[in-house]
Image (cartoon, rainbow, N blue to C red; front, side, top):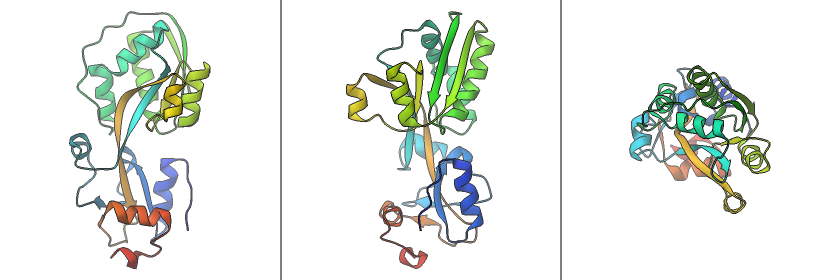
Length: 219
């Protein structure tokens, strides 16, 4: 049976508790309580996601209504994409770029950042770090979901939205602009008692569409 869980931690706990379970979660959240399977023979790691050999990943996007114009938003986005901001992403298990040096313009004001619960833990760390660089700014973080992150950015509820997926055509047509904050490896995890150690993309698809219903089907 399928169980829909909205938080990464809940997925890990459910797989840990059930010998027959399979789930997927952010690479950064996977500890030693579950077993990570390889996909098409490739392990999920920072290196394999970055070089494209591991096929399951997603972008962590920051979303704005067109180009950001609010001075705090412009400065904060530049910080997120800088050497320091990208290092925070990498240090927390995501896949960042090298980034450029950053000097804050020290803008004053308040912005609201909201959306994806997957992006939120990384965003929280970026906001904390940015406040030490620019104490003049106030940044409020609201955790909802990717779709609300995009619609909030377009409607003005959020100055910056967060989405852990690509934008839909309709969202882009509505004026949404996505900037990749980092990549997130999607690890496929099973209970430690499960002897399955590798799955193909087709097998994973079969499991999640309900075509494959027992572990014997994928042995």
